[in-house]
Image (tube, rainbow, N blue to C red; front, side, top):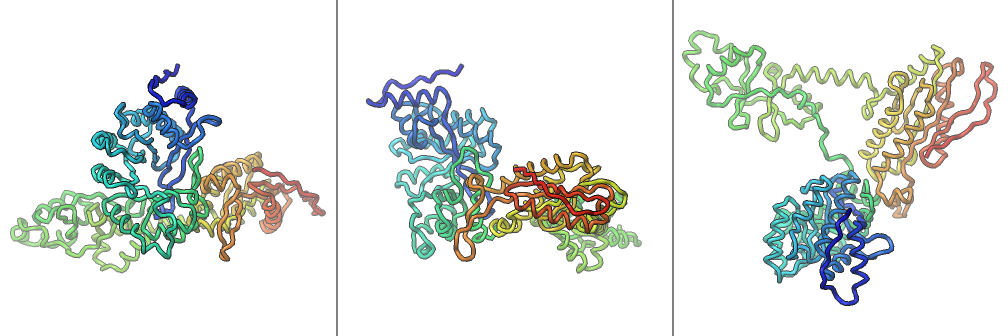
Amino acid sequence: MRKTIHRSAARPAGCEECAHQLGTVLDAATLQAGFRPVADFERCGILGFIAAVRGPAGMLHGSGTRLGRIARQLGLLREFSRAAAGVAVQRFTESGSGGLLFLPLAEGAVEAADGDLAADILAAAAASAFPAERIVLLLPPVDTECFDKAAESLARLRAAGFALASRGLGCDLAERHLWALTSPDFVVLDEHLFDGVDLATVRDTGLSERLAAEVERGRRVVADGIRSSNDFNALHHLGIRYGAGDFIGRASTAPTRAMSAAAHKAISAACNCSLDTQAAPGGVLERLLAKQPPVASTSTADDVFFLFERTPELRAIAVVDGDVPRGLISRYEMVDNMARPYRHELYGRKPCTRFMDAQPLVVDIGVSLPELSEIVVSADPRHLISGFIITDRGRYLGMGSVQDLVREVTAMQMEAAKYANPLTQLPGNVPINQHIDNLLAAGEACCIAYCDLDHFKPFNDVYGYAKGDEVIQLTARALAAAIDAERDFLGHIGGDDFVMVLRSADWEARCRAALARFGEEILDFFSNDDIERGGYVTENRKGELEFHRLTSLSIGAVEAAAGTFQNHLQVSKVAAEVKKKAKAIPGNSLFINQRHYPSDRESPADHQEETVT
């Protein structure tokens, strides 16, 4: 049974109905939470979400700010703050969204004397197993008459692991002093501070200098209230990296999976971030890296010589000072010199640097395979034997050998030859056609399903080719998950065209499963607003607004019974016609060919269409 909340007896006259409603909501835990996305302009992605709470439908209409003021007047501020934090964290956790959760605090909550705010929010986070490090507390204006209490409360919040965000640019001197002591991680720029600022006047405002000062203090600035591309462009020219507002994405009970199409297009164009800025994991040098211990420059020649003797497979040893490479000692050079008469007596106790190549081949761990190949080919031939040093931003990591590099290049070339399409690693035109011809020649019945994306070109224009590639890869995954890898075949003709050659008896169900999976996962590329509308609106080259439907998948399926077709060319002609019929159906669709092809090749009958949404 839920514990009834004990309320303060002191309450303003005329607020009995408010008190009753708020008490009912808190007792029943029926507050609702919504989330607005915060965009990261440089990464063209979402940094996190700003939470907001409201009362249930039909009760306590108003923003979380208004509800907090009512709770403060009624002596229920601590109960309300705890309930608001709990519902916001719980709903956010249930959504499975990544990023930060910006959690607004009610006015008076920071300096309140009747509770431990940090402990209450920690308890709310613990109840949902949500890490405190992902919570950013949006601090309200603070009553500086309670300066000491506010400073103590903020210190506890900081110690609990929460990040803090203030609205310090527009506050008075006393409050700015409090923020200076607290050193918040974020500064929120409210709409009233940049309203009316445009590209023509942005450099003439004093806002630029104030923002630069905040950034210099190590704080991240978030502009809240961005309503248009003009707002975004002005703020971007001010050097602001993060922003929220209706232009980025409206509030929703479920955090949106992407920012609005219009925002994505504007940000991509201004910030040149349409390409994925994250390095792909598992680079080539990570696979070639041999974590071989180096020697210090103070090591003696005998130390290194005996190390080579004890380790026959060792071809070279790096010489480092601290973790910075100074050179490389080749096994061949060392053994050749020290094996001569009296060399141990002459040089054995001297520093090993006498035998060191002071200009070794050094490459950073992030170098791509083509770059590494070019470096090695143009390097001095001696490096082909000794190999190269691998570093991470100048710090020694280990060694790499040219032999291993050659093996890696050979393996990748063989892989490229086997899988013609470099994006999806699926067989291309030649193996697709060969597979179909082999089945037809063997008299094996199959279904050829021609798959194509709808409304893909405008998606590429708005979101960029990197996102387009991700959609193509998503299509490949959805189709691959639907087939039987032992009986069926999946190929990538090129662009957004795929072919499934299905020998499974349940081929129709597999096509429907592919459509269902694609239809679910493609929504991750669009904002909640665009999903509700069924498409997105952006400006074309003439500056006119244009509506584009969400990207969908169409499949045209042709059954090929034994003796029906002679070769892949005949199948392709029919499959292309059927795919065209599928694309004429709105949404994710399946069109099944119903023509009959007896041995005398009489005229085909009618078609029958089937749609999956």
